[in-house]
Amino acid sequence: MFRCLNIRFPWAFIACLLSMLLFSAASAQKYGDDFARTVVKISTSKIGSNSDTAYGTGFVFYVSKGKKTYILTANHLVTDPDGFPFDRIRVEFQGDDVEYPAQVQYLYDEIDIAVLSLDQYSDTSLNLGESKYLKLGDNVFVLGYPGGGKVQVSRGSVSTRDKNKILLDSIRLAEGNSGGPLILEGTGEVVGVILQKSVHGKDNYALEIDQVKLYLGKESVFSSLADRHSPLPKTSDGVWIDTPTGMEFVWVPGGCYKMGCDDRADACFPYKKPAHEVCVDGFWMGKYEVTQGQWRNIMGDNPSAFQLGNNYPAEMVSWNDIQKFISRLKEKTGVNCRLPTEAEWEYACRSRGKSEIYAGDAEVSQIAWHGSEGGETTHPVGRKQANGLGIHDMSGNVREWCADIYSKDAYEKHQQNNPLYEGKGFGRVTRGGSWGYAPAYVRCAARQGNAPADRGSILGFRLVRTP
Image (cartoon, rainbow, N blue to C red; front, side, top):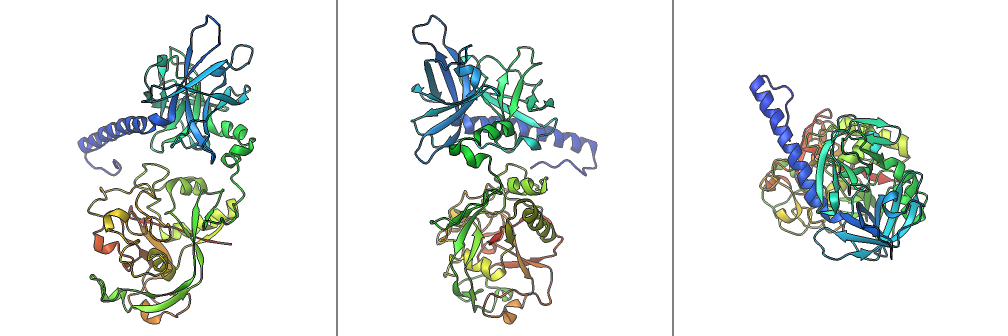
C-alpha cells in the first residue's frame, strides 16, 4: 500500500505518486486476468437470415444450487428491433473453443438489461457491488470483447453520474463491449453494466448496478441480491448468514477447557499463565474477520490502511470505533452483535478448547498469514485453512479486539463460568497476532493489550452474533 500523505520532501512525494499510478494500472490488469473466466463473449444471429453475427459481452453473476449459470448482458444485444430474442444465442468462455447455447431467462427492456441462463456450470462469478458509493473520479475498468476478439481491459474513471447512468468519457469502448461489467478498481466488484458506446468517447455509459439489482430482486431466484433487511434463520449446517451485512456466524457449542498456556508449548510467557479451567456457554462466532466492505456498508467509510478490496479485513479500527460500529449496525439493520470475551475467543480459536497451538491442527503456514509469509500486508479473509469449527484467520492476518480489559494477572482473577475481566488493567485485550508477527505470536494462547483508542494496520476484529 502506498502512502503519500505527510511526506516532507517534494521529490519523495512525486515518487510516491508515480508508484501509486503504477500500482493502480497493475491492479486493473490483474483483475482483468483474474476475472476473465467470468466475462463471456456472446454471439447472436437469426436462423435462416442473411444478417451477420453480432458480438457482445456478458458476465456470470449468479450460479444456482442446481448448478445453472446466470449471465447479465444488454437487452439490445440479444433481441431484434421488434424486441424478440434472437433464434441463436451462444456464449463462449475465455480460453474455451466451445460455444454453449444460452436461453433468455428475463428481459427488462425498460432498462436495456437481459439475463441469460446456461446449463453449463461455472465455478466462479462476479460480485455485484453497490454503485451508490461511487464518487466522481473513482478509478474503474471495463472487461469486454471489442470486435468479438479476446477479452480486453479498458481503464478510466467516473466522469459524471446522471440519474442511474455512470458516464465514462475517459474510457474508449468499441463494438462488442455492450453488456460487459464496469468494475470498481480496488474492490473487484461490479458497479455497472455497459450499455452504450461512442467512438468519440463522449456518450459511453453504464447503468448503475443498484438499479439492475432492483429488477433482479423481483425474481425469486435472485431475491437475496436485493433483500438487505431480513436476517436468515439459523441453518442446519451450523452457519448463520445475516442478509443485511453478509456476515457469516458459526455455532460454537458451549463447554469447558483449560485456558491459557502451560508447559506443552514454548513461548509460554507469564501473562499467558496460569492455565486454568473455564466454561463458556454456546455462542455464534464470526466465521471471518469483519471486512472492509462490511464496515463501509454500515459506517459509510473505509479507514483501512490496506484498501485492496472489500473482502480484506477492516483494520485501523480502535476498540472505541468498534463500539460505534456495533451501535450503528443495530440501528441500521436490527442485528445485535458484540465483541467476544477473551475466554470465548480462545475457546473458538482452539476448536472448542482442544490442545491446539494454532487455530487448527495444521502447520502454521497452512492456517495463518504471519510475518514469515504475510508479504507486509493483510490478505482476503478465508483464504487460509479453517480450524476445526470452520472459522478462518484466528491466527494471523489481523489482531482481533476482545471485550475484556487487559491485565497481566487477569487469569488469576477469572471466575470459572463465562469469565469477562473488567477489573484494573491497561486498555483492552487483542488476540491472534497479525500478518507482521512471527509464528510464536499468532498462537491461540498469545494475548496483548492496547489502549481503546489505538488504531493500526494490524488491528481488526470479528463479532459474536446475539439473538
